[in-house]
Image (cartoon, rainbow, N blue to C red; front, side, top):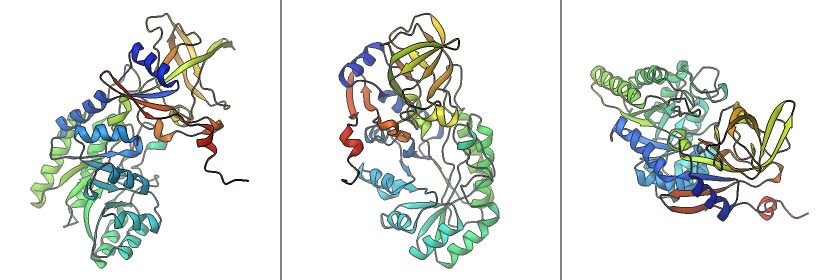
Length: 402
């Protein structure tokens, strides 16, 4: 996991202030290389841009060799196309889309992954004789938290296995070819076995679709948030995938391409949320360290109870003391880490919340009328501002005059 040097942190704070998301370009490239080395050129990597849609970050990933973009909204489709991805390099996997959204994606020539019979019926009405991919519920769920486990039967995502034949009937009647079978089991799983199980289910369903060209296993591969934690064994996952695809070919005489949609796996470890300690107080036998950021910038601790390690960049070798790291929002739940030791914290110190590149910036809000954080990309010795700090005028500019 990337941790900026004290010199880089101080440069960012001096030039652009805090809080700031600071991203290391070399870490982004390394993650793409790692996935490519494990899965090979034949596997297609579609970056799940919802994890972090900063165009500069997406640009680094594009240059590093991702194959395309997994989009979940019309704006994400537009961003992908404006960044130079062609329509065949964009997959659209919406959740409960309107007809207008289906129409937008279809008129852009983007392949759609649809996860309900309603969506398939409406797509077939809008685009007969076209192509589509079907998102199934593999009845295999895995994830770091209940809120991000997507492949189980209780989840809102995917077509029930019992409805797969009906999906095929609807498409056949409209002359629509089902060219892909898609699933996503959840976000933040660390064992390859769960996805391997889902892969077998998806490949089995693909046997029933003579037009199927690929299976898509989504993303969600676990990344370490704690220093002692290990990420998922990508090589083991790749080996399992090759075995499943080989078995499919042996049974059917057909070959399938594997699609993956890594999001957090590519960007999470590349970025920290740089903040400054504003307040320290003793209360109830605990030391509270207050920052100039909060869950408006990094919501995962408040939303999921997620752990983000915090380091004191100003005093990395200081004596570690147990603290509660709290944000600056008017909310009791605005706590970034309740159980951590921080090196000799003092007001004015620069601290970094690690592994903040996935679903940090992209889930930011302007709660308490506090603007989103600035964003900076570091590439070697080059330090570039990629997103400016919001002003009062930015926050109020969308409201109609009184």
